[in-house]
Length: 252
Length: 302
Image (tube, rainbow over all chains, first blue to last red; front, side, top):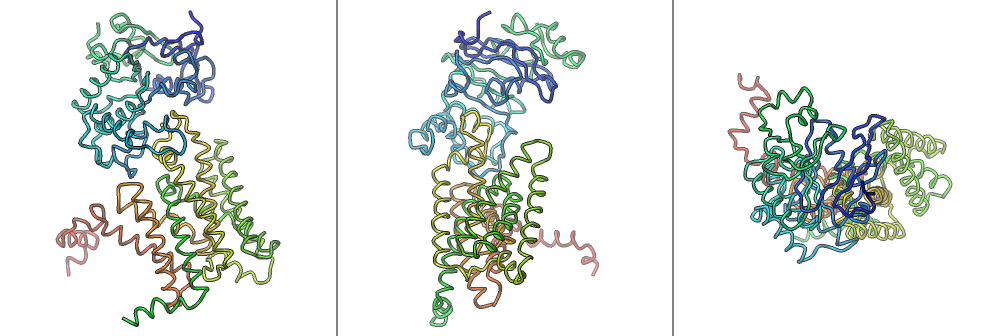
């Protein structure tokens, strides 16, 4: 196994343990994500899926272990990383419109004091177009549907023009149009050599949408190409007794 | 016509009235701009606590600094910044929730201030000025302090506008962009503290909160864009200052209370009539009658 600091993979995680008040939420995780991949992270509630993403992003301090992004620390590589948080994490009554939210994606590279200009605005419009939202640019964000809000978040990540994206449940509770729009954007990103790691809840669509899957329940149960690791046996080990309730899922 | 001109220019014959008007406009604008972030980030209780908690600082400036504008300003500012840090330390320890920490520091400091001021004989008069402001007593040097520090506060907000918007709307994005979110949050608290201290003489400790949140809240109801909200809030704040002072002059009402009452009246107008969002918007007489009948069921029997 290679040392994470010598790896130049999009993501390399070694021996990662995260705890809240002594209680481990992630235990001894190893993970390598190859380039140009769509990867799903699945697991029951409380499995640590969001925590894993936030720890990789440097938002949570791990108790032990190492994370490397393209061979560097998250601080060094922040310009190459995009994040789409859960929709519920912001106040949608904030007085701002879709275009302004998308433009926030350019703030990281603008640096202190500089205001976004015409170039940034054009990029933001382009990204709104990519997610099928061009006509909603001036719409106040509280007047968008849940799916449209999710697409605004995705457009904001697109203008960051990152090499790897982390998305927390982007398909949770969205309409069919939004789901198609988001998946088409994710496939385009993969064609351009980008890597996308998605926390996903819908076991039925894992095989259709993703190349690789990680089954997580505090520990890593399995990780690899969907065809190899997305098995009934592994799902049972991940979800335990609850898997009986999920029997409808078409599993190889 | 002449009477209207006389009505407006009459009070301007008094230099203290001119200074008061300038102070009220400047304070109205600075408070409203800072208040926009106070309202959007839900920091109203923090603002209220901070304005009360500087009382011991003012007492020290008053008792040992001779009560000059400068002494009150610097002691007030020092106390405000120490209080923000104190609240931060107690709530970051994680043992106590933030609003509880704010409440404890707020009441303790306020009591300390009252205890200190109560040791002097002219206690009641002095305390009243500090609690309720005395905008007509603003000196020329006081005006300079308001202009310089209020101007600095607005300049910093304009320079860091996009960073402050990101940490207010989506702190997690701020963190992933490595925006120094803690530094920006602390800076915002210092800006609020400075605003409170420069504004003290107009409305005083007890009514400070109204200047911070009421114009911003009214503006929030009138627009869905942040730059417009800030501009509208500044306009409402300045207008309240001017109208309030005339009300005070002609009605013989305490100036701070008059200014705050105008702010509140403007908020009520926005709350009732704001296009598309006001309480009465889209209400027909028929609906109103039904609403009234539901509230007072006995009225229908008469």
